[in-house]
Image (cartoon, rainbow, N blue to C red; front, side, top):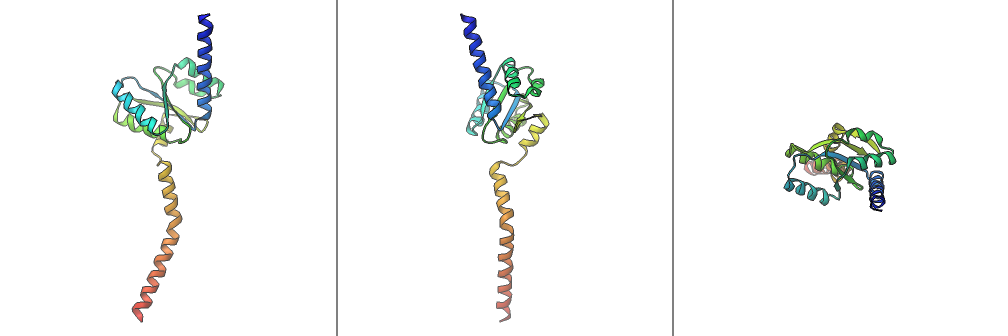
Length: 167
């Protein structure tokens, strides 16, 4: 009886991980070996504030979930202690937070992950982390859209001032 219950719990865990892999806009896999409790707590706090779910999961369960989610290329990095950050809303947030934390704490190593359904390596995760945030990108777009109007207004003002100086 106990074995049946354990098997059902594992199957349920695999289903939950599979759903997270499918629903997430990005998933980042990291090796957390060497971090102390205070560091892990601080990392979890930063991720939680950004709406990112961070879990330490058994590699065997994650491998079964990657097979079900058709992301079996991810299995090659599922070696050793593995922590996974899932983000549904912001594809950049987990990569940015984990990369920044890894810069300050050498013990945290990015292994790779999944971005928009595509398996990527650690270098791609780091490149994603260097991108500006969604708000930063929107403000850049807004400034690009406003530039022509601003330049036109400055030109009209300069012409008006020139006419005024001549009069």
